[in-house]
Length: 355
Image 1 (cartoon, rainbow, N blue to C red):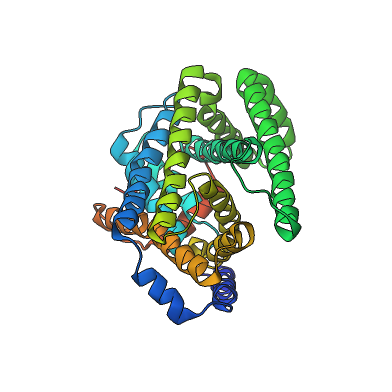
Image 2: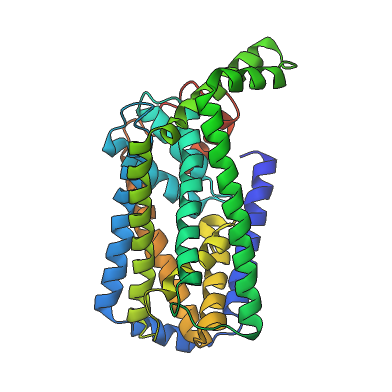
């Protein structure tokens, strides 16, 4: 591992440790342990079932999203999805976002740049879906409590962030529609922009952009887009269900709608570049429960810990198993992440062969 990467890993781990210490600083750890030990087992298992069902649903959605590019077997999509999430859990800077498309490109005939484009498009679809859930929560009469004081201020800030994110998503959709609809014009613009590069690099960049446009073709296929939207709504409803069943497991007086705000808060926490979102995920979940719903800090801390466990442990174990079971496996997950990062900045023609 080169020195620059070692520094990034060290900083990421230090940040995670600092956030975890901040997260635990006001909690009574003995009481937190007691809360976790006395969760309702039935509700906990239902939450775990939601987490497990989300994995194949993500793989299915990715498979559908790539239909305009080429045939992607469900098994390849499921393996790449699971391995990518495992990489994000144990490596910094959400490394799984580059590992996942490289794994899929290595197991299929889909160009690497098209896989990267589909992952980017998937993230924008996720953003749009969560924003719609948040909009529903914020505007539907009687669905949320009337916030006051600091809670009202923070909620207003979240609403402003949602509006800005929604605007960015609309810009992305518009650019994708224009670029894929007027492909020749878009390629001409890109060729002019990269005209200063050496011929070899220019050819590789142009090829990568062409494959990238292939990966965005679903934006022009209404049936594919509708199926992807349906699966996205189902996926995030399951994620919210996962949180709601944890409410029940911890015997908290919160309804299903409250899970939306917890999901939004933890997604913001995941944006902090620590392995698996450790620290940021936990703290933002804790803050949302205590600030918006008045849950005591020990219960909020216990739920945040269990939520992270349910959300990340199953997919990480599955991902490690599928990674280790791959024929001819020699490199580590960290090595694959480094190769994926290097590949993402190079040619988009093919992925790293991993079978």
